[in-house]
Amino acid sequence: MSVLEDGMVLTETVPGALPKQRSRWPFFVCLALLAPIVAYVIFKIPEWQNDEKLARLEERVSMLALPPDTEHDLGAAVQGTVGLQSGNGNHCDYLVRMPLLTKLPEAEIVRYYESAAIEGVAGSELSGAVYINPSGSWRDGFKDVIVEFFDGGHEAGFDMRCH
Image (cartoon, rainbow, N blue to C red; front, side):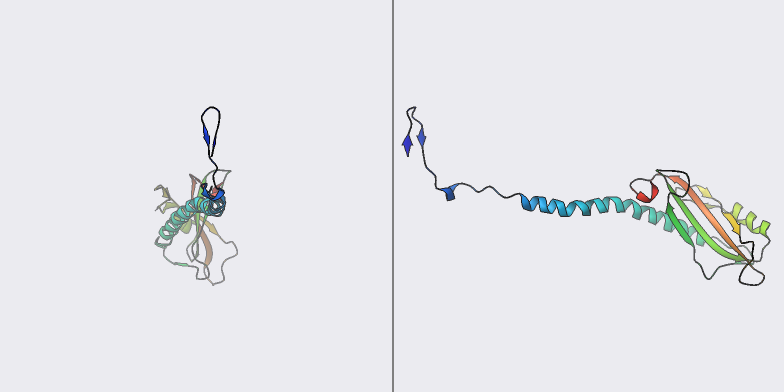
């Protein structure tokens, strides 16, 4: 111990007696490992939400009553997509396609699905657009038909498929 001229006392400390400064590298390693996981979840949650909306729309379309002399194409199921289907940028579109086989005249099947109304993603009414294969069908007496229900212009959020 030493005493200075102004009365201050200096003491010597043993190096092991000083408090150790904690290393910060574990914090930064955890942050580096967690950041991609958090970012993944932030961007996947909107996709999962939009997939759920699409699944409900597909269910409503598949529950729609078929007109007479019409049946589901056994080789293909109802198909749906969500993403940027029309126009450009920053909105989500939902498209559901239903493949059918029918014996009905073209005008009658078109009239049936254009007048059909199902609830869209946000509650609006949707009608179907009908596309008929001009070359017939693999089954005699039937026509291949695709009925599409389109619901567009919804908020994209962080769903990257909609940007």
